[in-house]
Length: 116
Image (cartoon, rainbow, N blue to C red; front, side, top):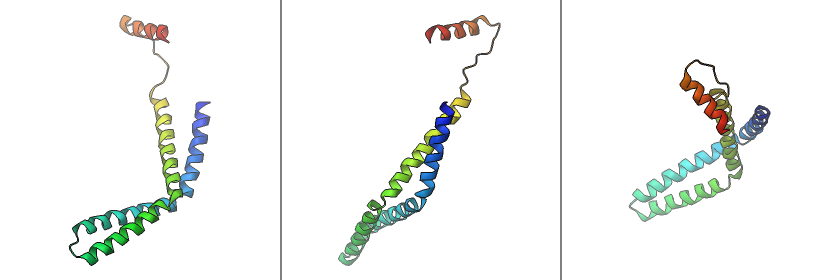
């Protein structure tokens, strides 16, 4: 039953991610522009260059904030990562114990059964 829930959550997150891929790319581009405009604003010496880079920075920040669907896509990406991690976690940790003649391994198995 858990696998069905993971599959449904993965499908929904995947569709949401693909639908919001364009705004996520626009958010990344506006974020890069904001980073470089802040960098050049701090390095500029003239007043004209400072004003120019400040205007570019404000425009790119407004563009970044306006990309609300990109934030929904980022949440879908986090959901996809969660599904992937849980799906692989179930494969690595099976609840099946192997029988052994070693008394220490039998003790560990019995102790785990008692503490459940």
